[in-house]
Image (cartoon, rainbow, N blue to C red; front, side):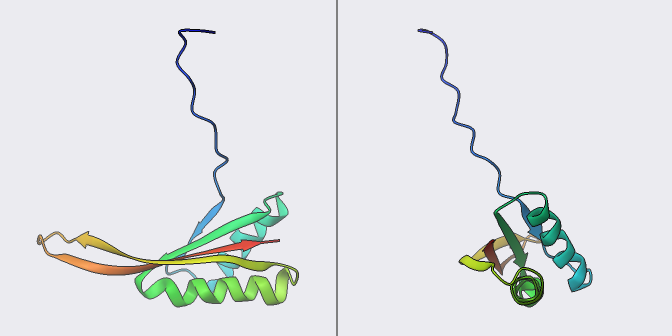
Length: 100
């Protein structure tokens, strides 16, 4: 109707698994849960020292659990973080998008 505000188009949120310090297979299970619940694409994100674990998760899912899956996109970046002491430091980050 005229005069009503336009609503933003709803963009479906991409399922994301954030990698931390837990065992690798915990994150593999999380990715598999998203795929088994109907998601066609899952993002695996990590920062700093967890980046190698994110790559391991993506490769285990791709090679062992969903052989037909592919890496659609890999994005790397650097984030500036400010510590409690006021110093800023650069932390690398990665986002790996897996598709069925």
